[in-house]
Image (tube, rainbow, N blue to C red; front, side, top):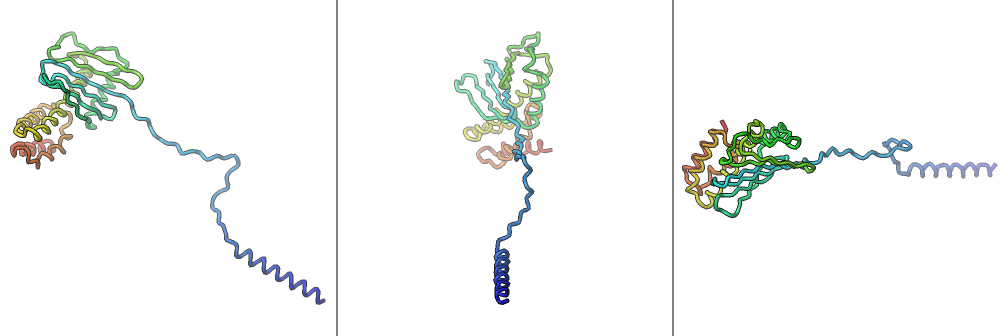
Length: 241
């Protein structure tokens, strides 16, 4: 009887110790779902479109003009450079150029309308106006390239495209000339502002809104005469209208 009581006591002590040990164990909570047999994690799909490698170029030559050679090169985003030469000067001037969103839309739309890489048309009109200059259009998409040369065209899209680039060059060269004037020949600034107003009135600028930050700079630039700064203010208000 004594032995039985001792056995019960021992069993009770062992059971109590086991319960205490279990309560002191850290609890790990799992919220994740068990992996399904054979399932492998799928990599995240990156929706990255490769950049368009297409390059566009328009060249103009007329040896007798004051600015006798102009080349505009740009990519599909409208960023590139303009190279131009003055008659009698051996070193060309190279400046960065960026077409505005609206100008780029017009330019790319005209290239698309021409289906340039698929076409064999040279765009030359029956009449010859070489004395007014020769135009070259070039396009390279990384796989194919093509160029066309003409001095006048009856193709509406081709002629519109050359005129769009003419406006780009007008604006870029005019800005360069004004920057040069305020650094070295500030007395030339009033005449250049007159030129900008004439180009604006004729619609010969690529995108006048693109000039707004530059005109705001000129308003407070005391390196140029007051008359030029006032003219910049009038042009600014006219464009913002």
